[in-house]
Length: 425
Image 1 (cartoon, helix red, strand yellow):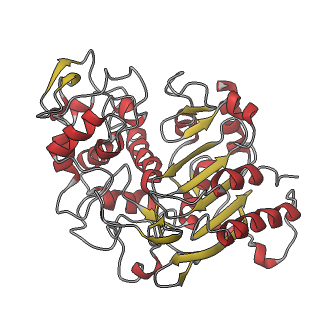
Image 2 (cartoon, rainbow, N blue to C red):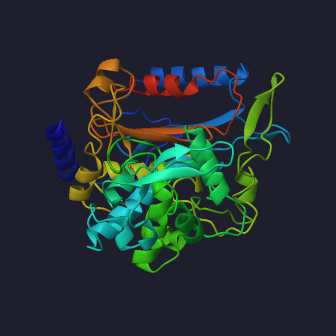
């Protein structure tokens, strides 16, 4: 498998980068080399059907091949209550798709020699010194017992969700949910007046699920790393992302919080109730968080909003071997490191490995079919957004929706991905 990744990186070096100025839109009605255009029509019909059947209220889907946009369509409604139609430049809360961007920021600083991946995080955030592992818990009063972990949490552990940290209110362990809530650790995003420094330092005092490096547990590790970016760079996290990633990649609509000109393009979060799509209520988070509130909390794990076009530029940078529009973000060597399995067999036999920023399709995933070539990288977000990028085919697919809670049989995610990989002639 390692030889495949090396080959893919070598291919990056042989071919020139693809930038947005070279993109060809389907609307231009020019033939697309190597693509079966009849099959693009099939994808379009499947997505139309999903809207008609009420599986989802609306979506934006995009396919990029060899740096050219071969499909980009908006369907349905962005706001059911107000009848606002979905547009190609609609803005979505991308939640956990933020993680790959935060990981990229960390690797930019790693390239500059600020730290090693196996440095303990306590070297930079002393509150994480001598982490403790949860051993007992009393539900009656939320008190707990711990033991000292067998090792320190490293930057690599945080990147790969092997630190032992939990995820609060969305954690699979009810004990951790109660512990995090009591400590007022912020999960995902917030409109409250709090900084990532404050939340991370609260988190550092809490027990771990397990010893660092013992297994894969999806966590707030990327929020910790967002704070690390601030410490190392001396810049607020949002400013670092703007200057080092978003501005060079021309990702003008990717931000933690929206300005007045962007507010009207934000897609409403919907849930399905009593046979219809309605606005999602305020629960542990406020669905309007990108538009209002204190706007101080920059969640490295889930806080960003973006468009399909912006995120496609980010993915194309990776397919280009770290460069886009003449701006180098990462080196090919770093891309190779990011795209290697970092978690061993922790993810089991589900067809995926995990690198330093993405899920990675392994041999089992290729055998399963519909996931892409070996080394295809992907992830998604809490509000029903998904993406994938295949280095072997130089192929990107994104399908963004905005739903939470109760659904209505949405099958567009797997159908879209499966059908995209049948386009290549």
